[in-house]
Image (tube, rainbow, N blue to C red; front, side, top):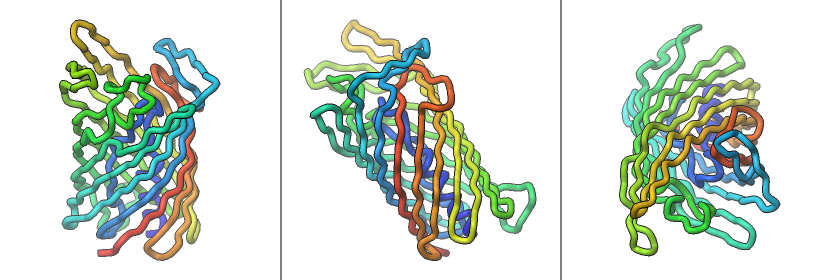
Length: 299
């Protein structure tokens, strides 16, 4: 039980960061992967851009000034019955660049998860597995409305849907997790500050693949995860000017340490870095430090 608890803390906390240029978060919802009834987590993260842009050819550019982002995030998940659960995520973001600061709500997410492969009794090879479908709300200020290069953006600011699969497994003191997440943003017409219309069209899908592993002691867990993110082209058109967009991709590694404060509560410290793995393209790259408190309720 201790191993599975810390796995759930790690998996959905360490993958919750997107490329810093976008100002948004992962489309992965909060899920209960233990045998508990409910789970609430509060996390605070501090991110700083290290590579300000990577162009379409993969060439890195670094400026003298870097954007910094602070995020306060609340995740809640509740099991409705033995197999179906509801989860939601509410992030508050503050961005700072030079002498300018921008704060507000980022994109909110909600999802329904289904445990289609429960672990009623121990099996050496069979994992616990979940599928989920989610809705992304355009509550964050869109980067497409930004007048200063997206520094003030807190999300895509577009309606979207997500679909994913999560599998977790414990072997003695070790735990493993794999995740596949896909999302798609709907075509939308946005009103700009000058009252002009901006047409947004996503041509395909975005998503991520994530793998995590951990080693557990009586009250502690050391964890590692590696993730690869991809976002297809999003075309936008204002009057007769059309921007065909670009493919965005990058990799990320995360290191974490979790400690069990009580039988039902824990804390996780996490470090994430987007400058080490992968072949980034058309993005910025950052590093993030975060702390998360997790409270759960038994059935």
